[in-house]
Image (cartoon, rainbow over all chains, first blue to last red; front, side):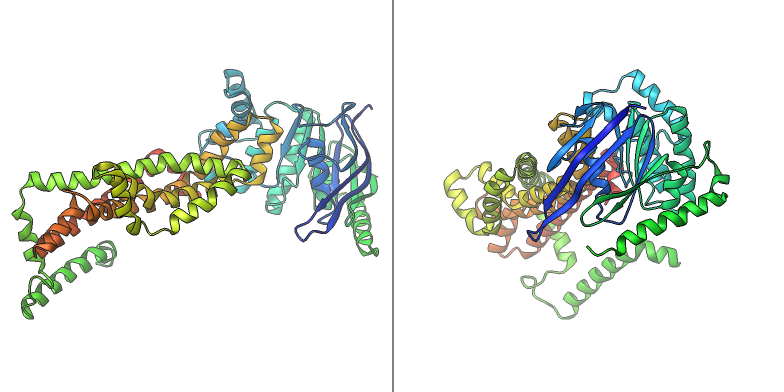
Length: 259
Length: 252
């Protein structure tokens, strides 16, 4: 499959509050294929979120090249959707208006087609009866669903997700994972998924990028051999447990290495 | 009974306090120029006819409201300027702090000398006293937008003015209303201060006039009406918030 996103020799350094130079990413090389689901896992400070923001065009790399569809990234592009750790909805808008907000914000107006698409997304995320509620009336899980629906409004080919389920309880997390898989099956897209949860990464991904911290480096890329479609049963599969243990070991041993 | 008590305890306390005040005045025969009794204050209301009262109340309200509106008109653009540009923030903030640190009561006579004795100096004094919390709260509100929402705006490559109108300004609404509630009561204070310095009508003028001619109950009656004005305006701001921005009450 053709590469969609390529990072070559990407370095990212910044000056921290106390004036010291911090290396967030060190010589990162990465090639992501079309419509694959890739998770990024690693300890805090390994630069997982930085990679997403670089690809999104929100940050510029200190050195190295990031290209999307063969073109260097210089600013955010339309084919991408971004889902943040927190739902970050606008409290004064209804659920439906939150979902169509990107159009309102980008073009200054929401046309009938956008509203129809908004309703479609509400149905897909099971939120139809909440269309006219405000975010404060929704649970955390429902709010995050709205935020995912918002990111899908323009049907992006690339979806960047920065620990989207980390603020949810574990039952809601599993439910959301299955829902995300369903959405991904219905409309395949390249998904970059940052997480702290090994199970979540295994359940969802084609490949898992294991990272180490200080400096942030790609330490290993693991192919997930679990068959698709995956469901609740996948979680009980012996191979699933084996892989979980294996990845935990890899993440953990990297941590203990002297800096 | 308990529910009744919970609902009306503040009102009951007020009634009891007024009764105790009345009783104390009668019992210790306190001279009226030291502390007039509630009944004497009430009686003094009729020494002015309704038309006169209305003139004084309207005079104070129009100064307070004009000053308040002028404060809003000045404060919101200033807050946007502070938030949108570091350079402007560095330019404007020291001036704001100097103005805020200057006792308005002290410069009020100077303003009257400079701007004459009309309504203008009174409005300016009121604005000076009430605009500072508005600027600071609005700027704080606009800066408290979660970083992710600003990133969302960037990923959409939306025009920068929409970041202000569609994200930052609405986000600041709860902060703006907290400040408006402070500013509206400050603007009554401002109007009274201005009337103390130079005025021929208004409740502040009436207090000054009646104390200088030993009509102490009338001064108290004016004071009472000032409090009513202040509470009414505060209630009006709260009502507007509930009416126009109901969501802002459970946010922050």
